[in-house]
Image 1 (cartoon, rainbow, N blue to C red):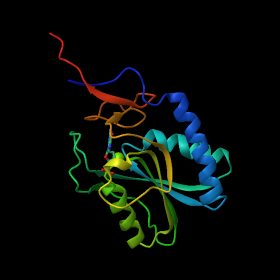
Image 2: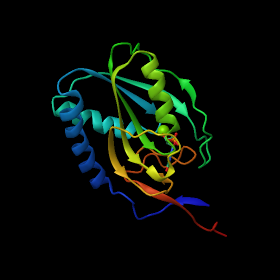
Image 3: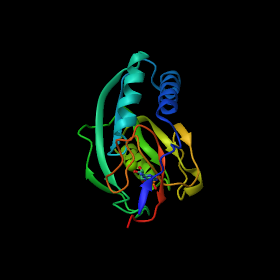
Length: 184
Ligand code: 5GP
Ligand code: MG
């Protein structure tokens, strides 16, 4: 049975602190007071996106629109299927718009790479990417996010929006999924 480890890998307090730092960096290096569209990749991005956008707003950043896409590359397994399936597209024309893609984690890189290429092909301008977590040791395509919260080892993590078979997204911290014997 796979269950979340009780000791967090990254505590909720540490995440809060880091999201604030990331917001400062994004306002300084990317948006300033220029309006931009935040394009979140559901469902994993939702907690990170909510916290990050409020911090950016507190700092005077101008989030013109919050938009979302539903893509899936994992299903209910811990192995990437390596195919990007778009289940719900953005509800906005990004041509000529400054776009910040927001995702929970960059792992093999297939998702972020495919979404980035797609939005560039649609004419998005000044496209940047922000992710909470990065697992560089798993990378299969050459892509790095412009803004990264934490770099982690090759571990499957849940919490703060990240799931295992749609569970554990509500955890306030990030923790590792581990094997535990079934109770009798
Ligand atoms: P990639 O395409 O870079 O391999 O990863 C795409 C998606 O896989 C991420 O946006 C995330 O939803 C999921 N994913 C990758 N690693 C993890 C992980 O450690 N935990 C969870 N819950 N999802 C992950
Ligand atoms: Mg995701």
